[in-house]
Image 1 (tube, rainbow, N blue to C red):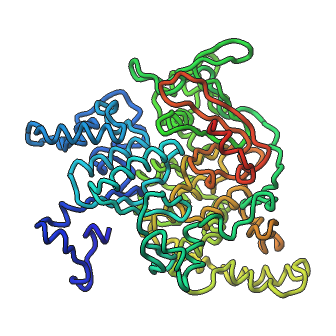
Image 2 (cartoon, rainbow, N blue to C red):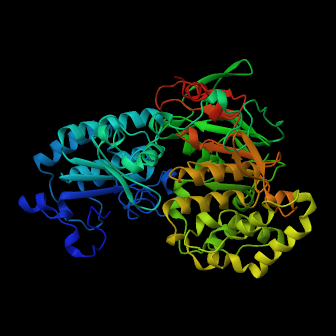
Length: 583
């Protein structure tokens, strides 16, 4: 954003554009920025065309503001816009760009109906329509399935090779650096540049920062043990970990098919069920199950979840039972209300992130898990308050990095280190913790700090915690950890499954926390009574507890989804990820 001229530069002359001055172009026209975080990348073009609320994208009624992809790309997204004919160069550019980005078949679709991957391509296409000299892409590979990621990389490689426009991208440490990238600038966690130059030279001559460079770039698995040497996943699961027994069905789909007119977006297949060929999606989720939903961008994963969360209007008419009940009343059977569903589900996704009111404080955001709506007053018990406090203390260092004093957990840990066996000093540790948390003074920051003031990664972390803090029957994580810093992601995955019981996984073993030894835990991990649904395009974001999976097919192919089971954490399964994707 600094390169795009969107921040004030001090001193002003520290930022200049010599080439643009030579060709008499302003940075505002010559440089286009496309970011993919919740503020800039959750929708196509911003709030004016993203839809007014979360479920708007699934509705068949079209409003005047429901612009098509063609309208968006050609700039016709104002209600009182001037009528103008597209010039021949505009039409030529539109044809070429939509062909490059595989958008031609989507031109008539309302932008609110686009999937996350389709939205990303549309936003890049919009920037290219302005014919910039430089295109800045912030996290272009975040949240893309492996096939779409390869396609996007090929498209960007073509742009880079033609230098039309010149390309500058930001990548996360877990992203592979594409082979076609020629130069790198590497920034550490302190926002300091520790290396820059030609990619081929950077690792050869990294100087004093060579070790850090290798760590950030993940060069050739530097410093990482092989899978044969690892027996416990990052979130504390052994290589062979059987699934929990399945309890009652929380979700039951029996022949679900979602269509808009003559276009079917989910369930356009026939498969054998109990020996008979049946059409549509037949699938169920039970208590104790941890299931991953995978598939290419646009295959219907988010649509499938929207039926479960009841954001999709067709939930009312389709053969779906949620917690043993249909949405509408039937003969001798009560329907289940939206408020009942919300109380029994915890949901985090890029869409929730985009629409969530970010003026709320961090504490209020977590407390909203007990409210009917984010801005409604939560019904908090003492247990609920203690669970919120536990989440805030566990992630205090991450959510409040400006804090210089030790956190309550750091004080407790220091009191336990180098002492007699913890079981002999439990009373002393409880006194230390009681003093460190007196009056919740150590959590004052959570009341004063708004969600908007947090980094993108920490905003995602808050919404992840909101989804699990109340211990709902069903936890739904739809790309919930996409874009979160690697260390925070690993800590969040550990907390999801084990709560405050395990502090870290180190040297192949899980280490119990001081809180668990001292009997001070308020948050457990997922219980056998809960179910978990996960959508992710990144193997690293899949929790180690996931055992069942379903992979939806490419849209329009008519193939049935593939299903399978994992013997243990996906992280430690050498061929598991390829098996999921059918490679």
